[in-house]
Image 1 (spheres, one colour):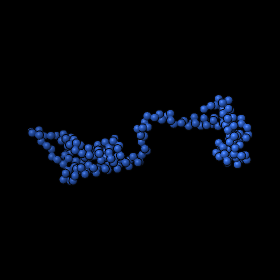
Image 2 (image 1 turned 180 degrees about the vertical axis):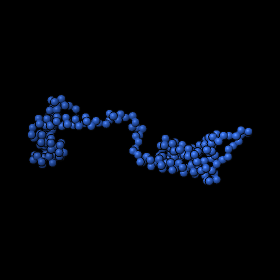
Image 3 (image 1 turned 135 degrees about the vertical axis):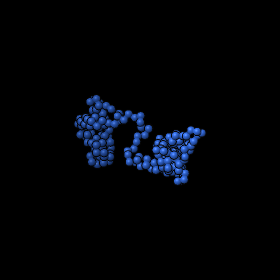
Image 4 (image 1 turned 60 degrees about the horizontal axis):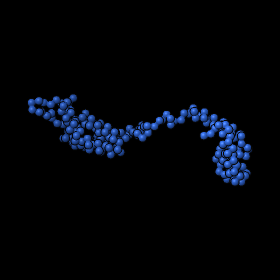
Length: 195
């Protein structure tokens, strides 16, 4: 398959260039003339992604090599054809990236992913154990202290809401909460559950 890029093979003295050698020289000339402007254009289109821009420029020049008839100056501007091919490759690349999951950035490559992902079996066991230990510690509290902890921490009531629900003044809720938390810390310390 002869790739002439729209030019006749050159002769050098008595020796005639082989078609492969002529293709290589034409591709090299094409690269030297257009790779810089193409790379700048594609780099802007790819928002600074150098690797993607290099790949697109390489693919553009490869298509020029495989379609030498498109580079015939009689058919139109070589530069315009190259930039149109590069533009289409940029569009294809963007569409392909949108169709697949996002890639992990370089800033995240060094992380220990296995260590940062919790093991669900350990989590369930730990949560169950914590719940049992909390229930035991709550049982050790007086009825008033247990009620204020359940109302403020488990049900998420404000001091005013807890006071209304328990039928005591807000100051009493505050003091009971303070002493209940102290008693819980002591109960945890007796069981060796300090964190």
